[in-house]
Length: 208
Image (cartoon, rainbow, N blue to C red; front, side):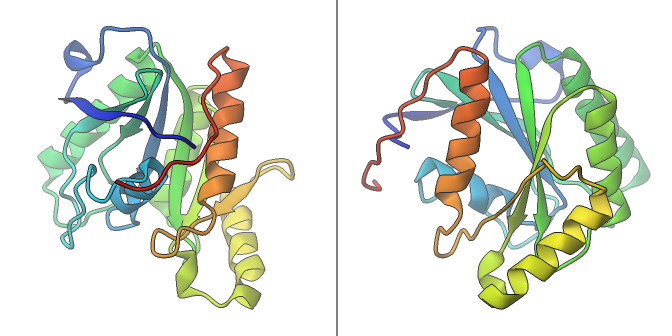
């Protein structure tokens, strides 16, 4: 994917702050510390446009990254962080529900799950929540470099079983460390956008 320009366009906590343009959006969500920011940086071929923290629960807003002035990648707050207070969890839940319901331009959700672990109850709830609101979902299995190649099939099968994925639903193993799987995720995103009439460039570009 040729990334000509990336802008961290805005951060939002409710629908009043969503982008006012009509550019389509794909969003990324997962448990705290699943590697979401690293995944976005890898896909955008940028070192630190999405802030990576060793402390989970740092992303508290919905962050919109405009790519090539054509479309958005959206970074949603991580879930499952035990140290959040009850009021913070309620605020998170309302913010996510509002986005899923009120964002007119959300066309797809990428659910990130650590490939080393079976889906947690919160992962299953997020998957089912998206399906309830008729949002198509693809699964990215992060941190694939932590496993031997011979282990990948076993662990992706466990994720598939835990989420009860249909046979045609793919899982995309991805490593932010060595960037394996990056091309497959971009091909999926290209197909998603093309279904909605947006043609995005697939040529490669050297990292900044």
